[in-house]
Image (cartoon, rainbow, N blue to C red; front, side, top):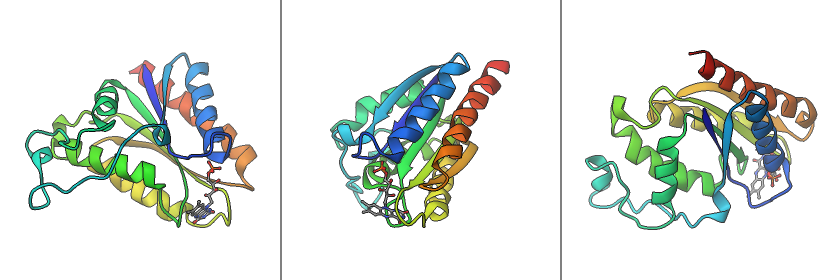
Length: 185
Ligand SMILES: Cc1cc2nc3c(=O)[nH]c(=O)nc-3n(C[C@H](O)[C@H](O)[C@H](O)COP(=O)(O)O)c2cc1C
């Protein structure tokens, strides 16, 4: 059981990093393996909306913009489950999360039931470290993305500065439960 924990903050010791660390702990406690990905350390650029809006991704399900995306896409295909952790920026996911998820969606949503993420469980975490606003709008777009790529929402977790302590416990527990569920199948 390999769980990919993908985070998307430039801050290495902020709320996002703490949430990702809690998810890793949960996976390990349940006996799973984790692979951590920090999107801000990778070179993944914008979708170019090739052609007239649909490029080769529509039929080939591969992105033609050559950068760090391709190797991460290959790793995503091999994972059994995912934890997506983003800081909340303007009530949305961060830019590094958005560019990666946009390109992955184009490649995988177009495969329907053959999506590499088909029925795989996903925990999405929105970390709002300032006003605490925008967690739900952020999670709402993450939920829609999970549906588009044909994955399965395991849990959606909003976290802010005030809820940090008990939400880290919840993230750990959610990751643990996701691994246990997969192992029982
Ligand atoms: C461009 C930008 C926009 C932000 N927008 C929000 C927001 O809408 N709501 C909020 O609570 N915090 C907002 N923040 C604060 C981040 O959510 C906060 O810094 C969060 O803890 C980021 O995760 P980090 O601790 O990993 O840096 C914003 C920060 C930045 C840089």
